[in-house]
Image 1: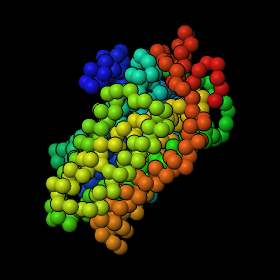
Image 2 (image 1 turned 180 degrees about the vertical axis):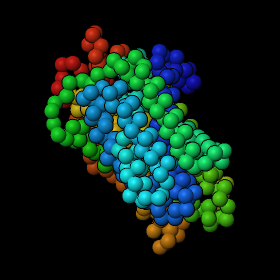
Image 3 (image 1 turned 90 degrees about the horizontal axis):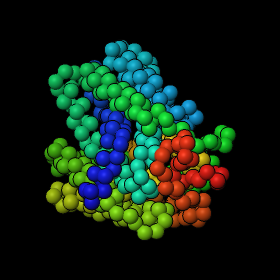
Image 4 (image 1 turned 90 degrees about the vertical axis):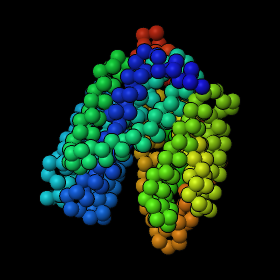
Length: 419
């Protein structure tokens, strides 16, 4: 298992691109907790903190596909680095002006959110130009999903450390400065500088004109909803057991399960079309969420959380492959950015639904939202099975970037076929 991942990291530019992307995404991965801690330190209420965080999240959801399309049209350096700088300036505006003017505070987080660079989609567009063959690209997708779990675990810890050492305002400034450096590392690399998207058909819908991609986005809205609801349900479960640390244990168990599942999924090539694999994985994901409604003792609940997390990273990694197969020619970064946006909007919806579920019912009801989300995602994939199977293309084995003079193109496209 480890040998395959080491082969990827040994590939020229691979470790730099993965590390730079993760560091560059740090501001986005930690924004919500940083905004909440900053708002509370400035004397703002939890309601205001939640509203500012929500404004940032919605702005990010709007900005990602738009910037992803810009990357496909104009290349990575011209979009990624300026966006990272503008996003950092937005958060710096919040750090320096505080809550003295609420309209200005909202403007600051909206600027930061809209300008969040689509580094995540950009990395997936670069993998085929760096790695050898379809198998390594698919393994890189799994490693990418695992790395996300690590970032979302380490990132909040780094924010809280910076807050304890300096202040919430300093944490905002430092995290975003680090993010700019990460984006700079990516765009200065040779693969990023030389990458060009395949020629695209002019269409106002862009990547969204693909029925298969729309089906996938519909399913992953509900996967995001399931995951978002668990974050709220976990807090309610911890309150029921009178210990704040319980929440940390549950989230750590969920992350550990995802880590194990992602590593196992990427360690081998799986038989069958990725679309069929995704249905199986999402079905197992939904099945893993359902036992959480039992809300047993803490040790058992932690074990169930780890089991529920096992299929999350494989589902995400497999979705990357499906996106690659269904994205219209020349829209790969935009398509990946739409997946990020849809997943994020679903997670926000999950947190919004799980809260009332706790208040109107019980903690078990909030975990039931997660189970329902997983089942709904499976239903969407089953209902759109023909669309997903009919519109897919077999990825080409790629050894160079799209602008390679030898004619290499993105996986999922061949030089003789139109979208």
